[in-house]
Image (cartoon, rainbow, N blue to C red; front, side):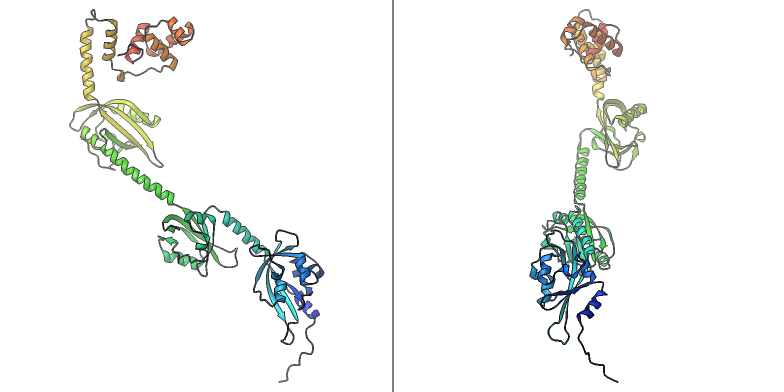
Length: 488
């Protein structure tokens, strides 16, 4: 087989120019002295120029025309520029630099640079080159992502898929856990034990290894002080960096957990207070089903209801008058409460009771409860009835009684608690108070600084609202309700 013909001539600059012109990557060719020999169109475009001469005649000239920063935007000294490093024989495996025309403070391009050394005979280099790849778009996307990642208030971290180490953490995650950046970055996610209490550790790790989406999952997140916080997290693969990574975002559920614990404690305390209360109490729902009764209610009524039995109120046989019960239930539904109500009731042994009734509606997040309170006033009402009967006997012969005694007896005969108030305005009550103190219209007008005609108008409305037909009737009506200074 004939041997190949020896290479009769070394490659010329013209040959190299023809070669690099076909490349999509940018190439700047130098000789060992630092003279810029040529550059292809891609390299010129990556510097915003159209002629080789605009790059500079030498490496020093190039350094005066362009400013460079490293990937963290720290400005490079001239000796750190790729042209000077290739002249010094320093290897540059995929060096990242930011580039801008001299005088600009913001980078205009991002170059990924590697070096090429060419020699003809295996001795000293004959030509040196730097090969440029414009990665500006990728780094713009990464810069936007980094800015968004830092500004995002939601705690988050980035995990490399190849070794499951933490590549980055945002301020929200540091604030949540109390760790510093140095304690986390380049540490193993699972080696640190950050995620505890996982439903399936193997499943979560498998999803991260496979670069798949991690659905929302609850976990116990380790904090710097050794405590753990309840969180819910999710994972999403992202491709804005030059390697496969997973973005993990977290939501803090610890406040919810603490609120639930506090609520549980409060509920237990309320149950204890409810059970120990000396007043008969019943808890019902909005559908008027009894959920719970306390010991005082059982002692008063003899009725037992198991907790959570949901017994309809009317099935207890407790209320003597269903109409009175319905009226109070409507008042609770419309106004949220009943105050100073009164009704008759029947105990389990058949005895009849008279109780004052109060109720309050409590609206929760998704439930409505009504607390009913019953106070036995049977004996008091019996005593009042007996007193009223005695007074009636006395009032049969009133010749020897003074007017003030008659007023007091009349008030005692009709206890204030059983009388419904009229819908009087504040001014009408003032006028009626003075009428009950035996002041005439002129005195009332002077006392209240109003005209006598205004007093007469108020008096007319008082008659209309109270049903009185004369002044003495209004006085009796008012004093029965504790008005005036002559009340007992």
